[in-house]
Length: 205
Image 1 (tube, rainbow, N blue to C red):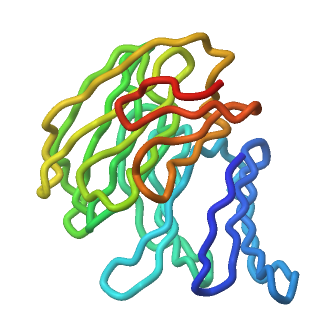
Image 2: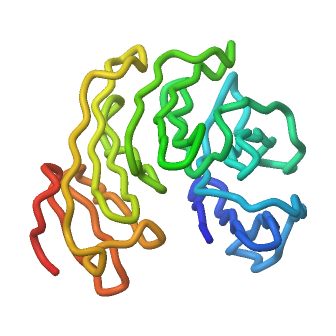
C-alpha cells in the first residue's frame, strides 16, 4: 500500500495493507533486513526522529497509531486517535493523524509526540484518506480523499488555523498515488499523473 524512503540509510519501508506486513529493504544490498506481521489493515505511514531515535509511525484500522523503532521494527509506543486511522504525518515533534469517530465523521487530530496529548481536533465531512506535508513548510498539509482535495494550515504549535477543499472528477486523482513536489508548489496524483497547484487548482490532467 505504501513505500517510505529513508535515503540517509538507503532503506525502503514497504507497507502491505492486506497482511499488515511491514518490511525494511536495504536497496544497496537488496536484502530485507527486518520484517514484522501485524495482521491488521494499515494506513499511510510516516518516518520521523524523536529524541534522537528514528521512528516509524503506522496508523491501524483499530484507531491506534503504533510507533516502531525504525531500525529494529520493535514497537515502542502507541497513541489512540479515533475509531479508525487512515494516515499519519510526523513533523516537528507532532503527529497529524486522519481518523474517524463514526461513519463520515473524519478528523485531523494533532498530537504532541512527547506527551501524546491532543493539541487540536479538526472535524471534516468526507475527509482525506492520505496526508502529505508540504515540503519546506512546518505548517501546511495536502490531503486527498475519495471525492475531495484538501489543504490544511496549522500554526507552529500544531493548532488548526484553516482548511480548504475542492471537488473534481475522482478520475483525476487518487489517494493511493499521491506525492507533493519538492518545491512545495503542488502535488502529483492519479495513475495518469494529474498535477495540481498548491492552491488545489488542476494544472495538468
